[in-house]
Length: 357
Ligand code: NAD
Ligand code: TYD
Image (cartoon, rainbow, N blue to C red; front, top):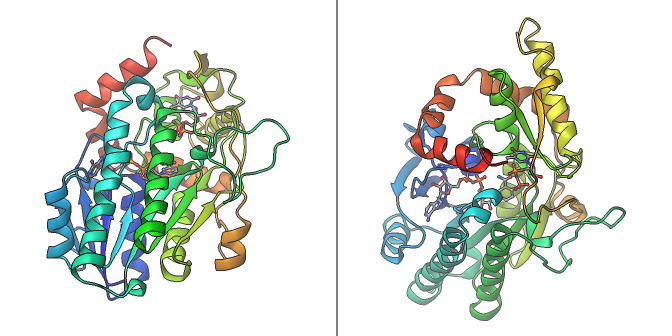
């Protein structure tokens, strides 16, 4: 791992991962390849922008010429592929972009990697790696009492987002099987932590609560996700890149499975505690049950035995500590928050998603 191309490095997990990688590896060059869609934000990397080991190359994963140029110019040996459309609610209101970015974009990345590494350079396969970042949502939804998903569980995606990620996973696997492209895939659960775009559950709740706005809980709020702190996720990806077996997939989960309503209530309680004089306390009074998401998956749960047995990975953050840190991070980064929230695209999305609920 010398010259690493991180796609989607201006997004939530990608920006955290670049920071993690620069902290963990001394002799490395990291190229952040990102189209800067609504979800991309270079301010998330302002603290490392001057690091001589880091550079930003604006580009679209669906654009073959731009991808090829980045691979050649920087002699990339490792691709960590985060770039995607990622919000389930957006995939319900506009699925086409998800197929284009997640399916065709991943295909373009794979084809470029195969051509550059295997056809042109005839590079030894142990020197290169395509790492694909995927989601637990490809497995569908669990009924009460059903066992957690393993790496062997058949895919059963329910939303257009999940289906587009499942398709991209299949393409990655097929490039390994058919062409011998060295790859790894990680399927991880819901992430939370610093720099998450404020349209996802946890930042929406924190920011609305701070302003005394309603806290929208879809349906009965009893849906369960397996919350993973983004730092724990970055550590797991780094381990898979350095020690994971080529051709393998690994599940990553947070070992925290509260219902959505419990997450919202915990954030309210944290705010009551750290802002005792707030005129909005008790923040739980702001909770508002709203119309459910169509096709809303009920429960996710990841079996992470493989990554802990093979690579010794375990999540380090408890949800209580992780949520407290996250609330404090949003409180101490008002400029980052307002630079996103003042954009018309953001306001338009929030209106489109919440006005009719
Ligand atoms: P994000 O939405 O915060 O960021 C996505 C990034 O990709 C943005 O910087 C955006 O500009 C970039 N991008 C989008 N389309 C692009 C294109 N065509 N070309 C180049 N760049 C493009 O996403 P995230 O939450 O950081 O998720 C990163 C990855 O992790 C995704 O592949 C997602 O499916 C996966 N994942 C996320 C979660 C989660 O909870 N956030 C959970 C499981 C898996
Ligand atoms: P989200 O952060 O959108 O992630 P995902 O859909 O990928 O799991 O949502 C997490 C959970 O929170 C999901 O069950 C939907 C729910 N949710 C709400 O109840 N209210 C909201 O305003 C949002 C954005 C999500």
